[in-house]
Length: 113
Length: 111
Image (cartoon, rainbow over all chains, first blue to last red):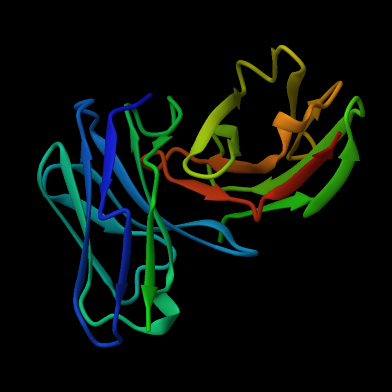
């Protein structure tokens, strides 16, 4: 299994609070991705990173920010959580963008009340 | 806008049946088509198809890429209850390995 750890695994919080999810990899892969998974939508890309301090937006980036200060860590922040951000969040890593498959962490289930 | 559509969205079969899952894609600068299986947690990688590898097989599972029709199929023969899962199709272009996923097909295999 790819060495990807997501934390926390579950979180319940209230609307308006900030939330940070962490993705940690031990594979030294260059590319890292954050997705959310909702019923009927499959996985949708939120943000991605192609190196330390190099990040860009995906298709559903509104309300989210990311940071990557080290190769192994990719943080996803919800500055002010809303109920529409209740979802399961997956982190993925990749060796070479598009040439090798991405591998996924076990996900974080986030509920915003 | 890149788009991937899977069909059917759900499928119920009995053990021993053969199933075919479909995936169509519209992706700028297409590079690869991937299939993942998702049980309770992380999606796990099954196949990756590219221009240089349009057919893959592993045990009872096989997949074909039709570049002309911009589609792919995933076949599972002699299904088992352990095949019950969500099957995700994703297509990627040449931009940073980003993937666009379909909605997924929920496969349920009854004994």
